[in-house]
Image (cartoon, rainbow over all chains, first blue to last red; front, side, top):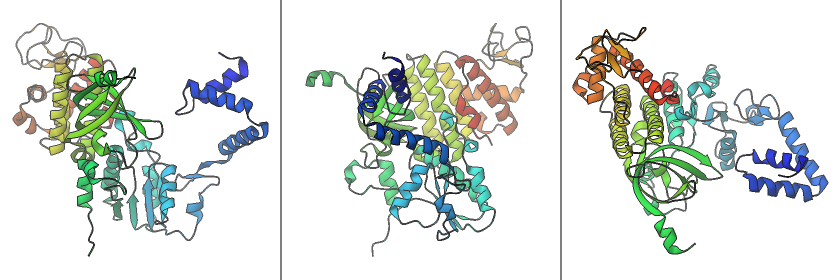
Length: 198
Length: 250
């Protein structure tokens, strides 16, 4: 145990995800020894992010204003919505530069064991967005794991009655991998989603 | 660490994946119910990366032949080969998914308390997941049958014909979760529910695996039996099974 402020800092850092007691101690001593100006910048960045950043009232993405930059951008295609689990996924899709529509962040995936059902996600907000009749296609881009697939199945069943086109991101073999190491589910999906070359 | 000590800490077993938790940047903690080693918690390193060699083999409801290395608190999964890919068939139907989640959560609770009957629990769960994936019966019937049989395997076998307290031959008209199932007029605690005769027959059929009777049961009796099974489960586990409230019942 250290005295007062140092121990308090170690305890606070130790509450961050992926930071154990040893890492917290190492970070605390790095902060102690670092340049005061650099640490002030870190404090300002944390304070600013907590004060300014909120969630977009339309899509649920992180934003510094009432609506995010993607929802405000008139050049984005208003007829397509890509549904993702987290704000981090918006950035992953944006990096591809292949999608020009808008997003909807659910805030997680259906996981009954963790107590997360459809009512804990932003599904009602998605249905509200569909009410103006402008949206023609919903692309479900939840994670390709079991919870993500179950969420996609639930959304597809719910959206079927509304009359919009519902699509799911393709899944299959990763670029750079060996075929022999592919598991049966992934390889099966790759066969189902094969495409014509000629 | 010497090579021999690493080899001595390595073991191989069949396992069904009960649940997963994210760990660090790309790892997961996998909770497994194994055939011979009971419930095991192990780390699957790099499994969240798209290039992971494990792929979908360590997703919930999958059955795999695993190689593991014993650790101080958590074991480490080093190799995995699929035995049963039930996740695909289950996740294609939302009701099946909610049912499978309730089954795996119950299995986790039961094997946490009782490690001795792990092999029987493993076989029971794999059978139930396979049946659910194939769509052999209504999902809610598979769930209630699994819950009753899992409790029976764990040492809490209910009685739906003879009186659970005095053994008087049945059928009886009252049900008591604390006393262990059907109870006669004399043993019946005040306020015990009095289910329909068909409901008691359905419960007995679900426990014994008489699918002919179970499949031909009415929705109202299925609903009543589901309520009794849930109360029996929660009484004996002493904790609520969170997934049960998310189960979609037709």
